[in-house]
Length: 199
Figure 1 (cartoon, rainbow, N blue to C red):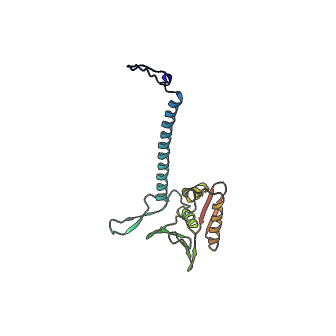
Figure 2: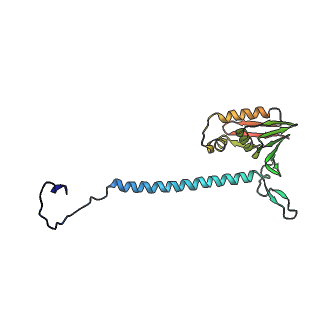
Figure 3: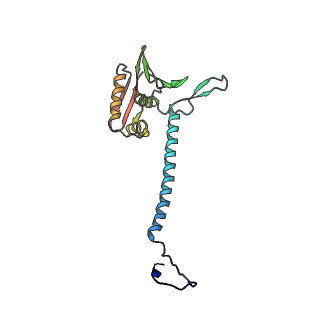
């Protein structure tokens, strides 16, 4: 009652009429903005969820999963989901049936869990990142692995985006593989890299 300040009013009942200004257009826009933000958040969640499910499907297709043989009770590799027949020129590198992280690459054995390459009684130790890169190649031998996929799955998922680090790790892996002419990493210009394994 700012207008009554300083005036003496007799004690009586007074009727006070209060009117509120209508909501401004800005408040309505803020409501729409908040609603749109919620919708974008839900859409983003569903998109990332579908991408993760695709990654799981791709990795389960690329690597054999041991399943129990009904007759013998032994674990056997499940090859039902592998589409090897569609690519006859691709030599599939099978993981060791006892350990899905052991791959036979030409004359070498790559143990991803131990971070090591074994050949002719020698063991070549690998760093964590070298192991992750080589494992991606071992899951898809003789197939092009896109540069962007390598960067995303090796570095971006850890929250780090890199430029030339991938080239450095490919170079290090090439040096460790150079004593084995039947296993090499080849650059596919404009696309990515390929792990070539010859017989």
